[in-house]
Amino acid sequence: MRMTRRDARRHTGARRRVAAALLAAALAASACAADGDGPGSPGAAGDGTEPAGEDGADADTDADAGTADAPEGDPLRIGMATSLSGSIALFGVANQNGAQLAVDQLNASGGVLGRPVELIVRDDQARPEEGAALARDLILSEGVDVLLGPVSSGVALAITEVSEERKVPFITHTANTSALMVEQFQPYMVSVVPNTYMEARAQGVDLADEPYTRWATIAPNYEFGQRQTQTFVDTITAENDQVEIIAQQFPELGEADLRPFITALISSDPEAVYSPLFAGDLITFTRQAADLGFFEQVEFTALYETDALEELRDEVDLEGVRGYSRCPFTIDNDQMRDFVDAYQQAHDRVPSDWACMAYDAVMLWAQVAEAAGTEDADAFVETVEDFSFTGLRGETHIRGIDHQAAVPSYIGRLTFDDELGFYVYTDLQTVPAEDIWLSEDEVTELRGG
Image 1 (cartoon, helix red, strand yellow):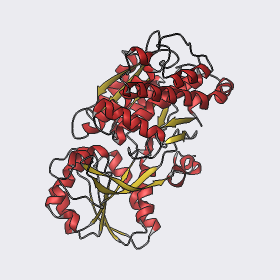
Image 2: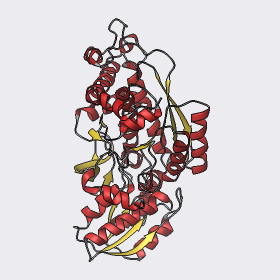
Image 3: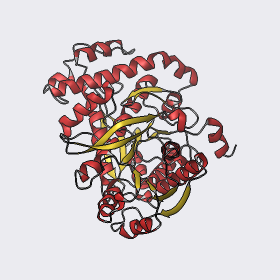
Image 4: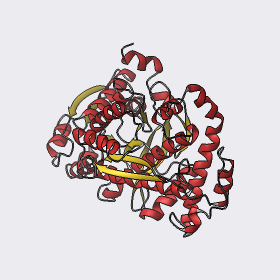
């Protein structure tokens, strides 16, 4: 049944209370887990003596007490297509872990709409055709209520077509091509990750003030790398007319030998290099670049995130290297601190950006479903536009025109953490979404009218 805008407005007043109750209940479940009453244990699931009310008021009481009614009925299903093999599998595994923790906490706090939640994960192998086939199978065979994922922007463009065709919500939390919000926007898609335009523009504006004019780039040769690099080049040359792009390299995703590309960069004699390489590719680049003396010759900035830094540990001296991040675990707020504690208890490590954003994607879907009072896909679309939800980056608004979450880009310098045994960000700078995303007029113009 399609929800009308009037129906949606009736739920508006309850949204923030429901969102707060859901997150509070989830975090209370997390606290119980810390005390040995984790998901699946009697203490976490509640004793069934305090039923939750429809308006969430009793849910607040349950959250305060750390208990909730056990969810009942057929499960609501979340289908995730992500990359669990190949050079970017680090991201996919983190996606799965973050989403599963959110599902466990929701179930321990009473489920969603009083029903249990189930996560079904498939490996898309970073191949668009595989991602589209998996999305279709998750919908038709598994009956999922929402799609999450993937890592690759090429796969995301394939999945969003299936989402539109089958009218099933799709929340992207890692893949971030801005084409999803502009040229190929469709109303069942929502993004909780800063898109390529936002991320590259944040870097271009910030770096335009640095004392470097001879720039080079290196990026993976597909949708994400090409689009993000072009936005960076357009931005930094527009912000500083002294900047010259003297070399650009585009190795294939998963390229094992990056030394010819690194040698070509060094030979062009740049002062600075920008890169959106990520995951296994960034790890390979860093190791091979260090062997060639790259870091002693240029200022380098890249998408250094927790999984890559943990893998590299102290192999390469990255002290003071500039990096950017999408959702670092060092964000200073209560939600992130509680999430990091729960994640460390579950996995004996701190969460990466990809775990954090997958967690946020599940929580957004849950909060929208509770606010709408149904898991219906069209009600999701009606409710999510201009919706505000509580996530790990704080209170976050979903913009109506393109369903882009108002999430910031983070910039910092790397410093070695002796306790963790790998590099982390210091002097973290937050660039607000409103400073870097396309204006609504630009979105309309790029869509052709």
